[in-house]
Image 1 (cartoon, rainbow, N blue to C red):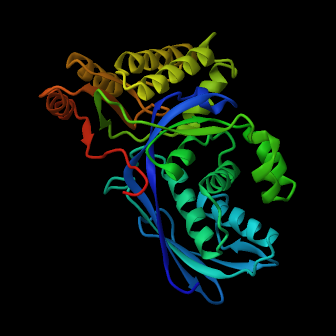
Image 2 (cartoon, rainbow, N blue to C red; image 1 turned 120 degrees about the vertical axis):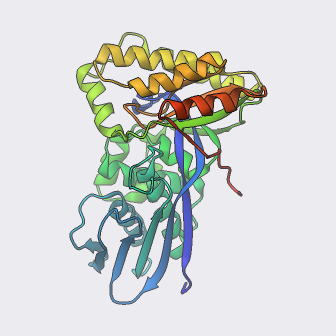
Length: 356
């Protein structure tokens, strides 16, 4: 293949199941949004390079040595891990190694570089796996690419749930159940990516498409305060000694299941979103970690005063909140206007479905 390849992967937002989903077998619901990480890959000759057009890092050069990529001044970055994992699978399939140049453009950040909290690390990993799948003609299907991208992400963030990887790979509304990631990586570390893709540790894993809400519109607000999911999740687990509060995992799984059932049945989900918010607030109180910041609380309260339901999305601590607004004239406009008055930015984004 000699022509340039361009791929893109959408960002994500959590609807419910945050924190719990980092435990194997726990479910969550996510959406993909129409903001993207875009990767452009073209063949190169004697060496490869990686450039981030959003200036996340300087140009990085790399080359093949003994069939594996070696990077100049590049550590365990998500981009490097994505390349390493696909290249290892390519080597296992006895395909010839080739060099290539990658340009990365982010649509998941503000003009000043602040992140929205839409899962840029997962999205860029998914986009690179997709591009290399095409470049090497590996013929990986959606689930195989999802698994490969998750293995790459886990090399940098071992506690990552993979929900963001699933949403960025499949698009739309999805329900996701996390696998035994430690078990998967134990197999991968023994040297075979192909074996890791098929190992029994995936057994709790599932991902299914869901219909969009029939009775509510979703609107997203951004607090302007970037947050670190990795640090927040680690903090909650450390403060709670990994046990959370009694019943948290069971209650989270129950509300996720009820939301999924309501979506499939065309029923309203507002009350269930409020239950999910209450669970996260209790988790924050019991762990001593501020999940719902004052601005996220105001975002939710404004929505509720206008007859909607709302919650923080993802790990909280900043970033985005989501509101589900009944399809009645005027409510959505009122919420957006009041958010702006409270220094919360309504984001102009929608759920992204494959094929759009």
